[in-house]
Length: 204
Image (cartoon, rainbow, N blue to C red; front, side):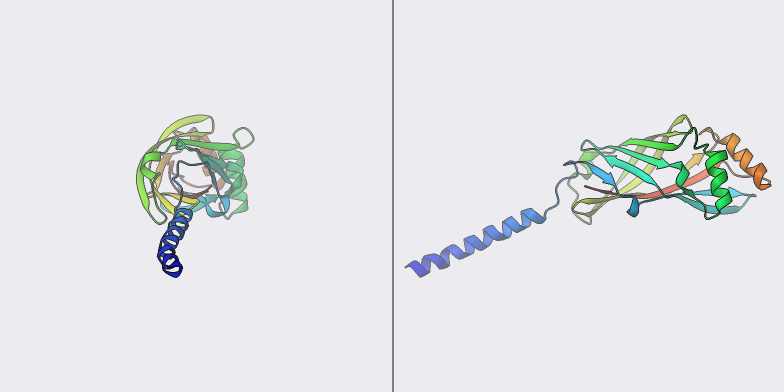
């Protein structure tokens, strides 16, 4: 009788083991814990257009940010980290356009919808329309964006724009800086329209 009882118990034990393993691998909801931006796996780029139709892409190398359990997200951009692949242009953007001595950082704050992304499994995504506050050069502006949130790992989330965000340098208090850059570079024009895109990874 004892061997038969052991054989009967084995399937139940195996089932419990599989259930325990599944519960260990199931990712926790996004609303559990805080998430921190991974600068090495994130990028934020913008495009400038000069002389009518000459477009050039640039990036910021130093980003910081987090997402709280309630979905409150923040992004800080170190403006001195601008990289245009031209040293003199980097310096002019730092000193003349952004005036990093007085305005070293740009900050973005936004409320994500935690209910829409809380139950995402690894590999799943959701698209959200956001209204964010951008604080740049002493001016706070409302910015709209459509983003895709991807659960790229059990403790990793990727947030990226689905289309460029169009910013106007004039409305952000940068018109004078743009004009000074145009004069220094001897250009006929630099557009105030600036497309911005980002791909940001948050880890828990």
